[in-house]
Amino acid sequence: MINLLIAVIYLAFISLGLPDSLLGSGWPSMYTELDVPVSFAGIISMIIAIGTIISSLCSDRITRRFGAGKVTAVSVAMTAVALGGFSLSRSFFALCLLAVPYGLGAGSIDAALNNYVALHYSASHMSWLHCMWGVGTVISPYIMEYALKSGKGWHTGYGTVSVIQAILCIFIFLSLPLWKKTVTSDATSGKPLSLSETFRLKGVKEVMITFFCYCSLESTVMLWAGSYMALFKNIPADVAAGYASMFFIGMTLGRAVNGFLAYKFSDRTLIYGGQGIIFAGIAVLLLPLGNIATLAGFVLIGLGCAPIYPCIIHSTPSYFGKEHSQAIIGVQMASAYTGTCLMPTLFGLIAKYVGIRFMPLWLLALLLLMAVYHKRLVRLALHS
Image (cartoon, rainbow, N blue to C red):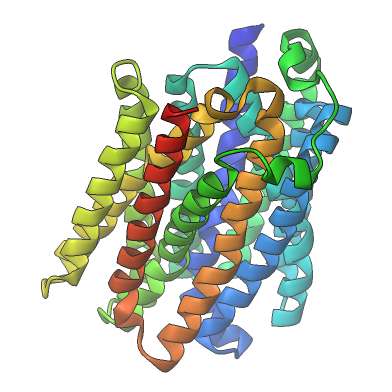
């Protein structure tokens, strides 16, 4: 039963990743059809992020009441309906409205599943499960690229992913009895922490800023890599949509390998290594090289991102205690999506008024700030 449940959770993580790369890969074609500025991608991304922040902050109470299985199933259904709406939309305003349920569903899945896996499975499983998220993010750009190249448009790309989400949702609903059989008291004992109680815990500020910077970096690449290549490197929009998947391929392969490395190395060591690889990828982007080097740079950034998210999540119960992990992961997700909400949008304004060519320097600043606050988190954990 446990093996069957982990397979279902793998599917749920694929479901979580499927929509995340659609906007970035499709936007070079979407904004011209919608007749809006290129920077407006940041508005949709921001609305989605606000929804995830709200649902993440509520995750402790909601998950304790309904359980991780039901929360995951309903949330996947919400994202499937929202993506279906995207495929039928013909206006920017409609996309903004549909981004609300999309964001609410995504945040609930993220917080509930990450805490469930952190409590019940090893660091290796955490990396492999986030590798499945990467599988979802790799599949979507190719679906979008095929829809664009075949002349069917970005609406078909969103519609196809909506159907896939709906199918995955059915599997998760059928698996609900398995979640009840494997749940332990760690996830449900005690009363939920209030936000003020959560913020007073030692190390919370440091882990929130670390997550803010990491997800700011990741989401900036996710949203703007395709546009960076199309507008700065002069790669055709449909080709850039496929090339943008190089970041997700690097992240996905990295997490597959990281699952094996987690048997030997600590979460902390893997995070340090990931930060170093991200730095190497940004350095490649800063060099005056050709398109192949640009692709290599995004692959390296993806490889470096691979261990950071799952390793920080997996270490949360050991840093803060199992009884507090759902509340801490909830505020981590909220902080992460605050970064997702604000920073790609802010970079969109930089791209519009200053130039998208400054993207590597933006990523470098986020990386350095993330490294500083993660080091502070580790120092607090070692002395607690």
